[in-house]
Image (cartoon, rainbow, N blue to C red):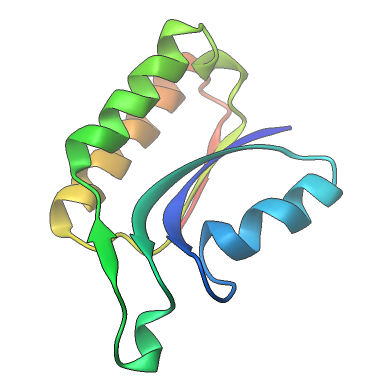
Length: 109
């Protein structure tokens, strides 16, 4: 199974892709992580550093995967913390694009 995981990443702690990728890989899933943010830690600590990535970056990375001819091999999209409304729109566009390439692909948010 190939899974495109579009969610946050933190340097300290385990949330978003920092917590999803390794367990899924241990279960035999091929995970293609794309980060929506890179923060020092979970925002629940009250203070953090880092940045929210632009929606265009997410779409550019998806385009790179598409150029490799891999979207048809994508069995699902997993999304999490977005950081901005623009990223939500980019994720929905990505889900539509994956489903165009593989109508059996699922989406979990």
